[in-house]
Length: 310
Image 1 (tube, rainbow, N blue to C red):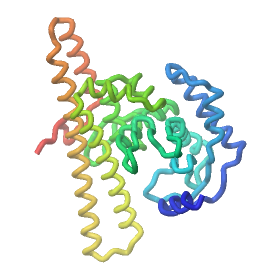
Image 2 (image 1 turned 180 degrees about the vertical axis):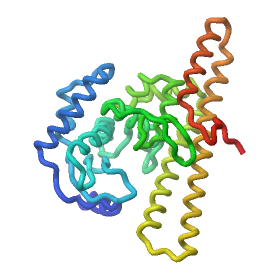
Image 3 (image 1 turned 90 degrees about the vertical axis):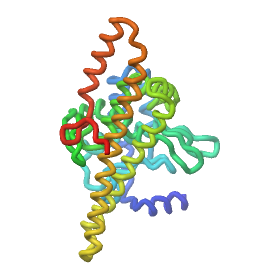
Image 4 (image 1 turned 120 degrees about the vertical axis):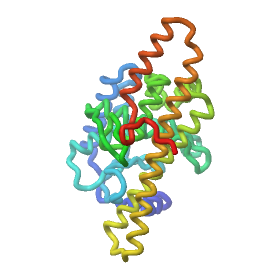
Protein backbone atom coordinates (compact mmCIF):
# COMPACT_ATOMS: atom_id res chain seq x y z
CA UNK A 1 0.00 0.00 0.00
CA UNK A 2 2.89 2.34 0.78
CA UNK A 3 4.30 2.04 -2.74
CA UNK A 4 0.86 2.77 -4.23
CA UNK A 5 0.48 5.85 -2.05
CA UNK A 6 3.89 7.09 -3.13
CA UNK A 7 2.93 6.53 -6.77
CA UNK A 8 -0.26 8.53 -6.22
CA UNK A 9 1.77 11.34 -4.66
CA UNK A 10 4.22 11.21 -7.58
CA UNK A 11 1.26 11.67 -9.95
CA UNK A 12 -0.16 14.50 -7.78
CA UNK A 13 -3.33 12.54 -6.95
CA UNK A 14 -4.68 13.37 -3.49
CA UNK A 15 -7.65 11.31 -2.30
CA UNK A 16 -10.47 13.27 -0.68
CA UNK A 17 -13.03 10.55 -0.07
CA UNK A 18 -14.25 7.14 -1.19
CA UNK A 19 -17.31 7.00 -3.45
CA UNK A 20 -20.10 5.17 -1.62
CA UNK A 21 -21.05 1.58 -2.45
CA UNK A 22 -24.52 2.81 -3.48
CA UNK A 23 -23.06 5.25 -6.02
CA UNK A 24 -20.49 2.73 -7.29
CA UNK A 25 -23.33 0.26 -7.90
CA UNK A 26 -25.23 2.96 -9.81
CA UNK A 27 -22.14 3.56 -11.96
CA UNK A 28 -21.75 -0.19 -12.50
CA UNK A 29 -25.40 -0.48 -13.57
CA UNK A 30 -25.05 2.44 -15.97
CA UNK A 31 -21.85 1.22 -17.64
CA UNK A 32 -22.88 -2.44 -17.82
CA UNK A 33 -26.25 -1.56 -19.40
CA UNK A 34 -24.60 0.64 -22.02
CA UNK A 35 -22.00 -1.95 -22.97
CA UNK A 36 -24.41 -4.87 -23.15
CA UNK A 37 -27.35 -3.09 -24.83
CA UNK A 38 -25.49 -0.89 -27.33
CA UNK A 39 -22.71 -3.32 -28.29
CA UNK A 40 -24.36 -6.77 -28.24
CA UNK A 41 -21.82 -8.03 -30.79
CA UNK A 42 -19.23 -8.10 -27.99
CA UNK A 43 -21.31 -10.81 -26.25
CA UNK A 44 -20.60 -9.41 -22.80
CA UNK A 45 -22.52 -10.84 -19.86
CA UNK A 46 -24.37 -8.11 -17.96
CA UNK A 47 -24.07 -9.75 -14.54
CA UNK A 48 -20.34 -10.38 -14.97
CA UNK A 49 -19.69 -6.80 -16.14
CA UNK A 50 -21.80 -5.30 -13.35
CA UNK A 51 -20.05 -7.43 -10.73
CA UNK A 52 -16.59 -6.56 -12.08
CA UNK A 53 -17.27 -2.81 -12.11
CA UNK A 54 -19.02 -2.79 -8.73
CA UNK A 55 -15.81 -4.07 -7.15
CA UNK A 56 -13.61 -1.27 -8.50
CA UNK A 57 -12.47 1.11 -5.73
CA UNK A 58 -13.55 4.63 -6.78
CA UNK A 59 -12.53 7.92 -5.22
CA UNK A 60 -13.08 11.66 -5.37
CA UNK A 61 -9.65 13.27 -5.51
CA UNK A 62 -7.62 16.33 -6.30
CA UNK A 63 -6.08 15.77 -9.74
CA UNK A 64 -3.44 17.81 -11.57
CA UNK A 65 -4.89 20.65 -13.65
CA UNK A 66 -3.19 19.37 -16.79
CA UNK A 67 -4.82 15.95 -16.41
CA UNK A 68 -8.31 14.81 -17.47
CA UNK A 69 -11.16 14.76 -14.95
CA UNK A 70 -10.88 11.03 -14.32
CA UNK A 71 -8.10 8.48 -14.37
CA UNK A 72 -7.74 4.73 -14.04
CA UNK A 73 -4.72 3.89 -11.90
CA UNK A 74 -3.73 0.36 -12.88
CA UNK A 75 -1.25 -0.12 -10.02
CA UNK A 76 -4.17 -0.50 -7.62
CA UNK A 77 -6.95 -0.98 -10.21
CA UNK A 78 -8.82 2.07 -8.93
CA UNK A 79 -10.57 5.06 -10.51
CA UNK A 80 -10.13 8.66 -9.38
CA UNK A 81 -12.52 11.49 -10.28
CA UNK A 82 -11.79 15.18 -9.95
CA UNK A 83 -13.55 16.87 -7.04
CA UNK A 84 -16.45 19.18 -7.87
CA UNK A 85 -17.97 17.10 -10.70
CA UNK A 86 -21.70 16.35 -10.86
CA UNK A 87 -22.65 12.70 -10.49
CA UNK A 88 -23.98 12.59 -14.08
CA UNK A 89 -20.58 13.81 -15.27
CA UNK A 90 -18.85 11.18 -13.14
CA UNK A 91 -21.04 8.42 -14.64
CA UNK A 92 -20.13 9.42 -18.19
CA UNK A 93 -16.44 9.71 -17.36
CA UNK A 94 -16.60 6.32 -15.65
CA UNK A 95 -17.45 4.58 -18.92
CA UNK A 96 -13.94 5.14 -20.33
CA UNK A 97 -12.19 4.25 -17.07
CA UNK A 98 -14.31 1.14 -16.42
CA UNK A 99 -13.46 -0.14 -19.90
CA UNK A 100 -9.79 0.15 -18.92
CA UNK A 101 -10.49 -2.07 -15.92
CA UNK A 102 -12.28 -4.63 -18.10
CA UNK A 103 -9.29 -4.62 -20.50
CA UNK A 104 -6.74 -5.28 -17.80
CA UNK A 105 -4.63 -8.44 -18.15
CA UNK A 106 -2.11 -9.10 -15.36
CA UNK A 107 0.33 -11.94 -14.77
CA UNK A 108 0.72 -14.07 -11.63
CA UNK A 109 2.90 -11.36 -10.07
CA UNK A 110 0.11 -8.79 -10.60
CA UNK A 111 2.18 -6.98 -13.24
CA UNK A 112 0.19 -5.44 -16.10
CA UNK A 113 0.75 -7.24 -19.41
CA UNK A 114 -2.04 -6.01 -21.65
CA UNK A 115 -4.53 -3.16 -21.58
CA UNK A 116 -6.66 -3.60 -24.67
CA UNK A 117 -4.51 -2.69 -27.67
CA UNK A 118 -1.60 -1.68 -25.44
CA UNK A 119 1.13 -4.17 -24.55
CA UNK A 120 3.49 -3.81 -21.59
CA UNK A 121 7.02 -5.18 -21.79
CA UNK A 122 8.86 -4.53 -18.56
CA UNK A 123 8.31 -0.87 -17.76
CA UNK A 124 7.58 0.11 -21.37
CA UNK A 125 4.13 0.42 -22.92
CA UNK A 126 3.49 -0.01 -26.65
CA UNK A 127 0.27 1.21 -28.23
CA UNK A 128 -1.02 3.39 -25.40
CA UNK A 129 -2.48 6.06 -27.71
CA UNK A 130 -3.99 3.49 -30.08
CA UNK A 131 -5.77 1.95 -27.10
CA UNK A 132 -6.89 5.30 -25.68
CA UNK A 133 -8.34 6.31 -29.03
CA UNK A 134 -10.21 3.02 -29.41
CA UNK A 135 -11.58 3.19 -25.86
CA UNK A 136 -12.72 6.76 -26.40
CA UNK A 137 -14.42 5.86 -29.69
CA UNK A 138 -16.37 3.18 -27.83
CA UNK A 139 -17.14 5.59 -24.98
CA UNK A 140 -18.36 8.34 -27.31
CA UNK A 141 -20.70 5.86 -29.00
CA UNK A 142 -22.02 4.49 -25.70
CA UNK A 143 -22.81 7.87 -24.11
CA UNK A 144 -24.22 9.29 -27.36
CA UNK A 145 -21.64 12.02 -27.87
CA UNK A 146 -22.24 13.88 -31.12
CA UNK A 147 -19.46 13.90 -33.70
CA UNK A 148 -18.31 17.30 -34.85
CA UNK A 149 -15.90 19.18 -37.09
CA UNK A 150 -13.27 20.74 -34.84
CA UNK A 151 -10.04 22.67 -35.21
CA UNK A 152 -7.01 21.95 -33.05
CA UNK A 153 -3.43 23.06 -33.74
CA UNK A 154 -4.64 24.49 -37.09
CA UNK A 155 -5.89 21.04 -38.12
CA UNK A 156 -9.55 20.91 -39.13
CA UNK A 157 -10.92 17.41 -38.68
CA UNK A 158 -14.08 15.39 -38.02
CA UNK A 159 -14.04 13.53 -34.73
CA UNK A 160 -16.42 11.37 -32.71
CA UNK A 161 -14.90 12.83 -29.54
CA UNK A 162 -14.60 16.65 -29.73
CA UNK A 163 -13.48 17.05 -26.11
CA UNK A 164 -11.26 14.03 -25.38
CA UNK A 165 -8.45 12.81 -27.67
CA UNK A 166 -10.03 14.40 -30.78
CA UNK A 167 -6.95 13.94 -33.01
CA UNK A 168 -6.22 10.41 -31.82
CA UNK A 169 -9.87 9.38 -32.21
CA UNK A 170 -9.86 10.70 -35.77
CA UNK A 171 -6.77 8.71 -36.73
CA UNK A 172 -7.90 5.55 -34.92
CA UNK A 173 -11.19 5.77 -36.79
CA UNK A 174 -9.22 6.01 -40.04
CA UNK A 175 -7.26 2.92 -38.99
CA UNK A 176 -10.47 1.08 -38.08
CA UNK A 177 -11.98 2.03 -41.43
CA UNK A 178 -9.15 0.50 -43.47
CA UNK A 179 -8.74 -2.49 -41.14
CA UNK A 180 -11.96 -3.69 -39.48
CA UNK A 181 -14.12 -1.86 -36.94
CA UNK A 182 -15.73 -4.91 -35.35
CA UNK A 183 -12.32 -6.51 -34.76
CA UNK A 184 -10.97 -3.19 -33.48
CA UNK A 185 -13.64 -2.99 -30.77
CA UNK A 186 -13.46 -6.70 -29.94
CA UNK A 187 -9.67 -6.56 -29.45
CA UNK A 188 -10.02 -3.35 -27.43
CA UNK A 189 -12.33 -5.03 -24.93
CA UNK A 190 -10.81 -8.51 -24.90
CA UNK A 191 -7.14 -7.46 -25.17
CA UNK A 192 -6.24 -9.81 -28.00
CA UNK A 193 -4.06 -9.39 -31.11
CA UNK A 194 -6.73 -10.00 -33.75
CA UNK A 195 -7.10 -6.35 -34.66
CA UNK A 196 -3.39 -5.60 -34.92
CA UNK A 197 -3.02 -8.60 -37.23
CA UNK A 198 -5.70 -7.09 -39.51
CA UNK A 199 -4.04 -3.68 -39.23
CA UNK A 200 -0.72 -5.20 -40.38
CA UNK A 201 -2.47 -7.06 -43.22
CA UNK A 202 -4.15 -3.83 -44.38
CA UNK A 203 -1.20 -1.43 -44.15
CA UNK A 204 1.99 -3.49 -43.79
CA UNK A 205 3.96 -4.41 -40.67
CA UNK A 206 6.49 -1.55 -40.72
CA UNK A 207 3.76 0.97 -41.51
CA UNK A 208 1.46 -0.32 -38.76
CA UNK A 209 4.20 -0.01 -36.12
CA UNK A 210 5.16 3.46 -37.41
CA UNK A 211 1.54 4.63 -37.22
CA UNK A 212 1.24 3.22 -33.70
CA UNK A 213 4.43 5.05 -32.65
CA UNK A 214 3.19 8.31 -34.18
CA UNK A 215 -0.04 8.13 -32.18
CA UNK A 216 2.03 7.83 -29.00
CA UNK A 217 4.08 10.86 -30.12
CA UNK A 218 0.93 12.94 -30.55
CA UNK A 219 -0.26 12.15 -27.03
CA UNK A 220 3.22 12.87 -25.64
CA UNK A 221 3.37 16.27 -27.39
CA UNK A 222 -0.10 17.20 -26.12
CA UNK A 223 0.90 16.27 -22.57
CA UNK A 224 4.01 18.46 -22.87
CA UNK A 225 1.90 21.39 -24.12
CA UNK A 226 -0.52 20.97 -21.19
CA UNK A 227 2.35 21.06 -18.68
CA UNK A 228 3.89 24.13 -20.32
CA UNK A 229 0.53 25.92 -20.41
CA UNK A 230 0.12 25.14 -16.71
CA UNK A 231 3.54 26.65 -16.07
CA UNK A 232 2.64 29.84 -17.95
CA UNK A 233 -0.66 30.17 -16.09
CA UNK A 234 0.57 29.45 -12.56
CA UNK A 235 4.14 30.77 -12.40
CA UNK A 236 5.34 34.36 -12.43
CA UNK A 237 7.83 33.95 -15.27
CA UNK A 238 10.39 36.54 -16.26
CA UNK A 239 10.08 37.69 -19.89
CA UNK A 240 12.97 35.55 -21.13
CA UNK A 241 11.58 32.41 -19.46
CA UNK A 242 8.05 33.24 -20.60
CA UNK A 243 9.24 33.68 -24.19
CA UNK A 244 11.18 30.42 -24.13
CA UNK A 245 8.18 28.55 -22.73
CA UNK A 246 5.68 29.95 -25.24
CA UNK A 247 8.13 29.28 -28.08
CA UNK A 248 8.37 25.68 -26.88
CA UNK A 249 4.57 25.41 -26.96
CA UNK A 250 4.56 26.66 -30.56
CA UNK A 251 7.25 24.13 -31.43
CA UNK A 252 5.21 21.24 -30.02
CA UNK A 253 2.09 22.46 -31.84
CA UNK A 254 4.05 22.47 -35.08
CA UNK A 255 5.26 18.93 -34.34
CA UNK A 256 1.68 17.81 -33.73
CA UNK A 257 0.55 19.19 -37.09
CA UNK A 258 3.38 17.46 -38.89
CA UNK A 259 3.01 14.11 -37.14
CA UNK A 260 -0.77 14.13 -37.64
CA UNK A 261 -0.51 14.82 -41.39
CA UNK A 262 2.39 12.40 -41.84
CA UNK A 263 0.42 9.69 -40.03
CA UNK A 264 -2.71 10.32 -42.03
CA UNK A 265 -0.72 10.23 -45.27
CA UNK A 266 0.89 6.97 -44.18
CA UNK A 267 -2.51 5.40 -43.48
CA UNK A 268 -3.79 6.53 -46.89
CA UNK A 269 -0.78 5.52 -48.96
CA UNK A 270 -0.01 2.25 -47.19
CA UNK A 271 -3.59 0.98 -47.50
CA UNK A 272 -4.77 2.37 -50.82
CA UNK A 273 -1.49 1.72 -52.64
CA UNK A 274 -1.66 -1.93 -51.54
CA UNK A 275 -5.32 -2.19 -52.50
CA UNK A 276 -4.71 -0.67 -55.95
CA UNK A 277 -2.63 -3.73 -56.86
CA UNK A 278 -5.74 -5.92 -56.47
CA UNK A 279 -7.96 -4.11 -59.00
CA UNK A 280 -8.42 -6.97 -61.42
CA UNK A 281 -12.02 -6.38 -62.53
CA UNK A 282 -14.64 -3.63 -62.89
CA UNK A 283 -16.47 -4.66 -59.72
CA UNK A 284 -13.31 -4.39 -57.64
CA UNK A 285 -12.49 -0.99 -59.19
CA UNK A 286 -15.95 0.31 -58.30
CA UNK A 287 -15.65 -0.96 -54.72
CA UNK A 288 -12.25 0.71 -54.43
CA UNK A 289 -13.64 4.00 -55.76
CA UNK A 290 -16.52 4.00 -53.27
CA UNK A 291 -14.22 3.08 -50.39
CA UNK A 292 -11.81 5.88 -51.27
CA UNK A 293 -14.65 8.37 -51.68
CA UNK A 294 -16.10 7.50 -48.25
CA UNK A 295 -12.67 7.71 -46.63
CA UNK A 296 -12.49 11.39 -47.61
CA UNK A 297 -15.11 12.10 -44.93
CA UNK A 298 -12.61 11.09 -42.25
CA UNK A 299 -9.53 13.11 -43.16
CA UNK A 300 -8.14 16.15 -41.39
CA UNK A 301 -6.75 19.16 -43.26
CA UNK A 302 -4.31 21.97 -42.62
CA UNK A 303 -5.20 25.20 -44.46
CA UNK A 304 -7.44 23.21 -46.77
CA UNK A 305 -4.74 20.68 -47.69
CA UNK A 306 -4.71 16.96 -46.95
CA UNK A 307 -0.93 16.81 -47.05
CA UNK A 308 1.63 19.06 -45.45
CA UNK A 309 4.99 17.72 -46.57
CA UNK A 310 8.11 19.80 -46.24
